[in-house]
Image (cartoon, rainbow, N blue to C red; front, top):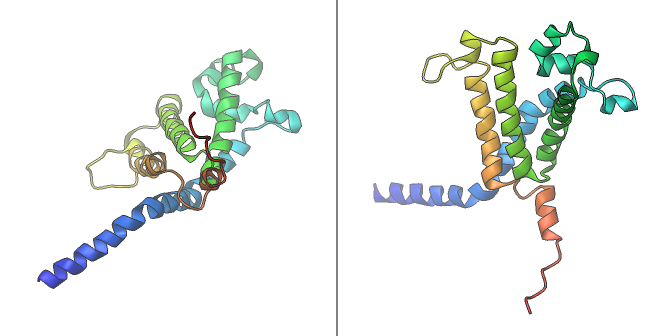
Length: 188
């Protein structure tokens, strides 16, 4: 029995030693495989046409982000305020740039923290703007584990939380930037 416990202790020590690089690497891989295309497709679809479309979101972007406001103005973007434009443009750019930063491992902790905020706002808009209710919101500590908001997005936030706490891992632009950063001069 003691030999079995020592074997277990050795294995867990090796796993613990691998955790600092393995956890963030796996979190970025899971984010890339599960959420990158989802967010990129959603964000890119919100830009308007042509080069100026990068600064003029299309009507669908406003409907997604401000559904009740769009309904109130008869889906006429010109009746919305500068605030609506700024929030929609910032949200659209965030939906594209934050996932790319995470995948590349660039400013990963900040990008993951931004994505956690994005997921929170997205969930609030889903409930209060788009009227998501009941089983789609879900409940924790119940038998079904497939609710769109509380169940799925909890795992999204957990994955992003690993990146906030542990960084991007060894294969990342963050690591490259810290590796090639010139040493600070010695204090005088």
